[in-house]
Length: 108
Length: 112
Image (tube, rainbow over all chains, first blue to last red; front, side, top):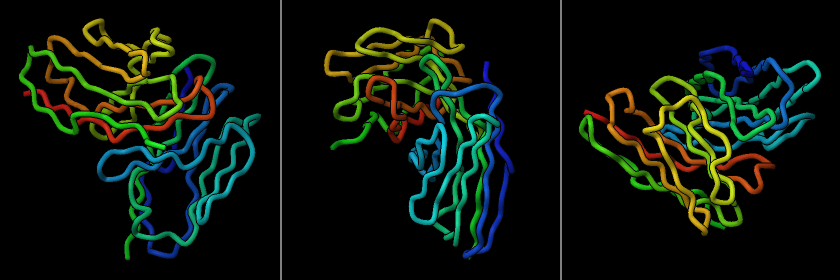
């Protein structure tokens, strides 16, 4: 099956700093989503981005499907950005395959 | 527009018992998927239901079973619970399996 690798596994920032999270995948995909998992466990959809670039406030994402990677940019980080960020991909079929996540900690 | 709702939020069961978890899909969504997330790991796909039919299954034993109802809500049933079944169970819905998935808040199951 498809492999999804996220880096870095852990990231500690000071409030106001910028960061880039990376997701590499091993095969062509029909769907790629970035999620933020809050402390209560809910996966909040950040971007549906099988290709191209999208922006939403301080967050933006780019997927280069031909090179099989996606990047999530967080600018001017805030303490509320802390949590686990997951990349998930879907090939033909029904399932999302998740990476192991990046644990982000933003200190005040 | 209501999101994906799951019940119960927390549950404690004894090894060997059976459990049923429930999920109401987002309005307009006809596809429901279930995921198991062990502590410190990414979610793992259990199975998906599309228009009341199972449409794909992950590497889980048959004691994990499910249903989807005509209103597109869904149940996950787990028989003969084992300690390793302790996890966060997440439900996700989508419309026709395109344009991404919306997740519920999950049910945290503890097996003792």
